[in-house]
Picture 1 (tube, one colour):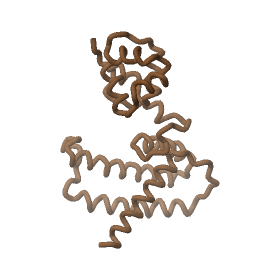
Picture 2: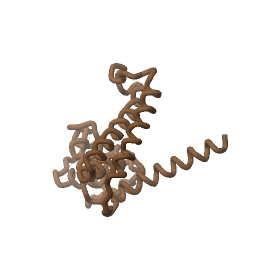
Picture 3: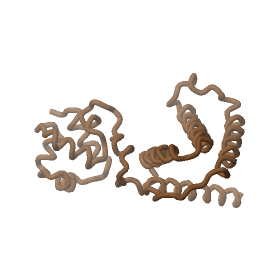
Picture 4: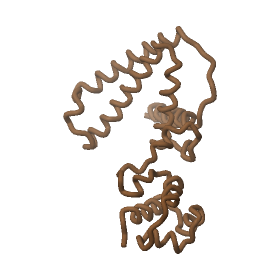
Amino acid sequence: MATVFSERLAAIRKEKGVAQKMAAAELGVSQALLSHYEKGIRECSPAFIARAAAYYEVSADYLLGLSDEPRNMNTVFSQEEQPFDGDAVPQTMYRALVWLGREAESLSAACATQVMRLYALSFYQAANVFFTQGKLPEAQIHLQEEQPFYLSIAEHIHTQQLSDALRQSSGSPGPCPRCVETILRSCEEQTKEAVNRLRCE
């Protein structure tokens, strides 16, 4: 009999594009046993659930139906490099932001304040996309019509203040994690594409 676990186990494998035979081998079970797990014919051990969650990069709570959030947040906060760090996906961005947040503690007070203001501004701009797509209630966005004007002014002010703060401080950089490199590279590529489009118009 199908359960939330069996349905999600099968769905996440198909979503990842992994053949059942390959997934079974990677998870250390026979294909027949994995098939039984995916159909809800057999119950699996907690050890298998843990392996499956790690293999598919989702939380055990998600597989068990205790959460509708598939992502394992432990991977976001882990200081170890993750398999997806080379891909410009939301989870990589979360990890880059977490790392930058940790590093912000070593900044001067003025720099740290401006970094947090830019974080908040970026969050608001991203949230506005969700608002316009009907994913956030209208009551959450208060600037509405004046928003582009206010946001452009705020970004200019925060960037200028950060520039002023940066002139007063310096330090020797440590190693840059792959997740940060990926997001920086993606941003640079998108910026170049946008500039090239403007030049062609």
